[in-house]
Image 1 (tube, rainbow, N blue to C red):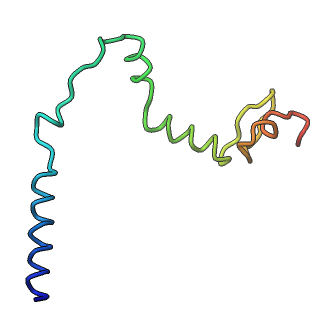
Image 2 (image 1 turned 120 degrees about the vertical axis):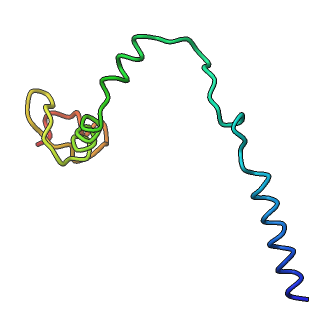
Length: 87
């Protein structure tokens, strides 16, 4: 009896997997808006190095200019971050 249940479960899983695979037409992308050169310019400025630097800046690894002084971002609590009197 246990072998029949196992086979039934495997059969059900197989059917679910077969019918849940997206078709090529379901995964193709169709443009939803027209080309915008401004957006393309912004996208072309994003590089792997710039994203990595942004992460280092906001994680407190590197110093960043805040209020005219070089500081490390030690918190994302906005009042603390922009309170220039805090050392």
